[in-house]
Image (cartoon, rainbow, N blue to C red; front, side):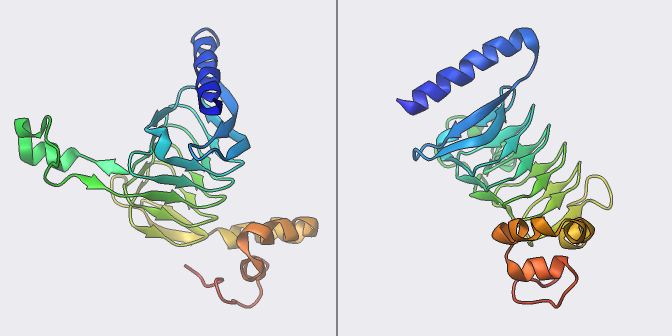
Length: 216
């Protein structure tokens, strides 16, 4: 019953958005029944096969994105997906090229990619980014706008394309970016450590690198 109510809620919000513009809907329930009351999803994001999508809480998914759960997609707590982003768990473009008209209706197309994708906790995905099928993005990551990301991205990496159109590479470390704020607001250090871990808090504060706190 709850998935149906959620579906009706989103349909009503989308209908209203036709008159008022895109809207953010609070609350999400995963196919396994887990409730995410603080997660927000735009009425104008395309959710492909949401039964394969597992969202954490406090996730934000903005306007005009394509979120593909067809082969498994996990978006962990606090992740932000901005606008005009494609997060994919399948790809058919190679199949279509090599098979041509034989592609239509084929049960197992040559070159078809099916891979589960994961976006780590408290990561930020900038606008106009493509996350390729099978990408495993760590926690605390910043993906700069107009990036193409595939493979494994280490925790706390700042990634982007040095040249537009090329694959994203590691450019920095978000723990270093967070240092000044955490030093200025020590009351937030325990909150940071809850999701990042004590070793990464020490790394963010400029201390010794412990296990899990190495530079990516």
